[in-house]
Image 1 (tube, rainbow, N blue to C red):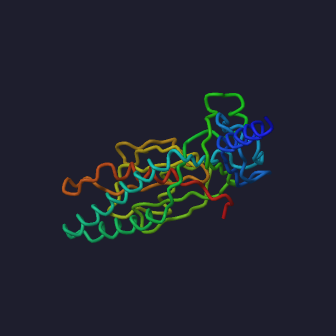
Image 2 (image 1 turned 135 degrees about the vertical axis):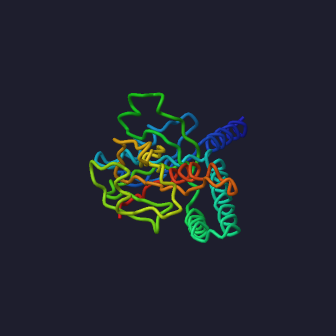
Image 3 (image 1 turned 90 degrees about the vertical axis):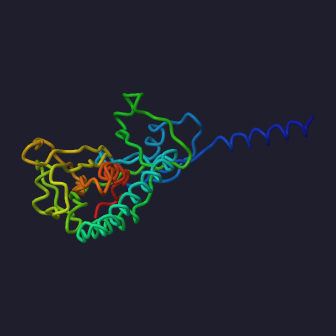
Length: 255
């Protein structure tokens, strides 16, 4: 009987260990670290454990969600494939500047990690009052609360990527004056990636200009590559590049 009770206790402990998982909370929080939880645990549980600083930049908080890793690995592979195809096609058509731009973007994207970032509200107050926003966690998930940055990044079809001072209120298009596009850029649009991971295509030409679109601190502005050549078919390149850039969280500590 004693052996049976001991075995049952061991099995119970083993079962409990198997159902526990871990989530990490880092950045501008009072209690950074890795926490164990059981199935059914939600975002607010981990956020309450980490205790984000009330003055941290909750808008840019990032949830790196393990189930999205495979999907975003494929997204990155697709972007790299299109950039390589664009480079090769441009070389065949003797468009050296476009080929060089595609090659540079290929190298830049290659260095970016696959994160699994899921767009989500990580404001503790909002999570407490809105259950629909309080998603379930998975083993290996990571919550990052960065400090508020003071810059906006412009990249893509520009001479080189620019890190510019954030100015409020300044429309997204205005940042291009300090980081002008190259001739191979698509002059009709830009892609605005807000620090919460939201992506928006913004009209930028005289015929379709969208006024009143502002970049928040920590935003990324993607100047798209002109890809309207039917002989260089990469119609989804810019949108997918913007989507992949949106998976990159801000640094935990602002530079």
